[in-house]
Length: 154
Image (cartoon, rainbow, N blue to C red; front, top):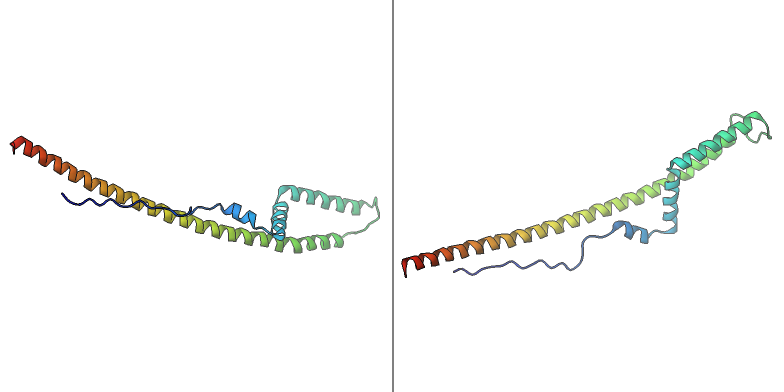
């Protein structure tokens, strides 16, 4: 009879999986929270609709002259306001996108760690199964040998 080797179980010292969303939300600064809010607001249909209504209202009020023309055609003040809005909105949205890209990199790394952990566990399971298969084969051989001895009367 050979010496049976049973592989040891893998003991995990710490969980590899982490909630990246929670980690990021916990360490957001005021500026980052503001950038997220601006990106979410400016990138919504609600913002587009409200801004469109305000622009149409601006144009109508300045065109029909019910009120004093504060911005006559070609609406230079309106263009200045829109340009200023775009000048501030663009870098703020870029900050939000950069933070999202960093978050995506962390999620990708976390996925890699989870995959590596799963691979290690699958290997450990396979080693256990192979050891069990060897032991079952040896036990079967021993049973057959004992049956043979019993049948021959040894």
